[in-house]
Amino acid sequence: MSADLKDLLADLTRRMDGAIESLRRDLSGLRSGRASPNLLEPVRVEAYGSEVPLSQVGSIAVPEARMLTVSVWDRTVVSAVERAIRDSGLGLNPSTDGQTVRVPIPALTEERRNELARAAAKYTENGKISVRGVRRDGMEQTKALEKKSEISQDDMKTWTDAIQKLTDQYIKKVDDIFADKEREIKQV
Image (cartoon, rainbow, N blue to C red):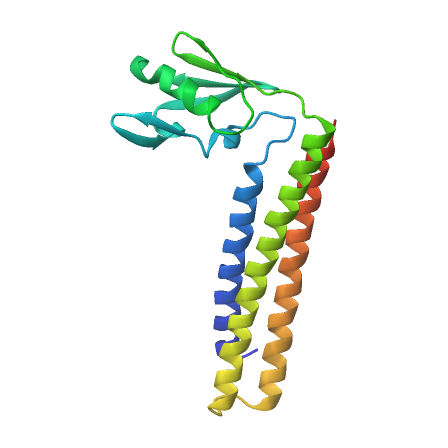
């Protein structure tokens, strides 16, 4: 394998890893029946004259499987944290206990599980599209090099095969991540 091909594959691998990480982040926001601090990641709190991420006004803990707690650092923003969680569209109903906001995680209905599985499938398809976009870029770079006569047709075939093999590996990773998340969502 030539150094140029290794460099190209390293770049494509790095970019495909980014697509996988983005997918994992998206899927971590989907609520399964278990509590996860990632669930509150998208929540933004009106505090100190602007909207800030929840993680900047308190620490999130998981004391039990179906409960999250937010220990708010500043007493003046406790009600804003509670309101932000309630209005976040996550279907959560927090309650305040001093400077701690308790967030019980309700059990999921079958309908909600199916909704979450569809959302996970949508995120997964976006992940695949990202991986394929990286492959397309790699193929275009390869064709450009062949057109400029910097690589031979035989090399081009080798390069495109290597890029396709890498893409297939990442598409399988995306499918595996989706299967795990779907199993987690469907688990009662």
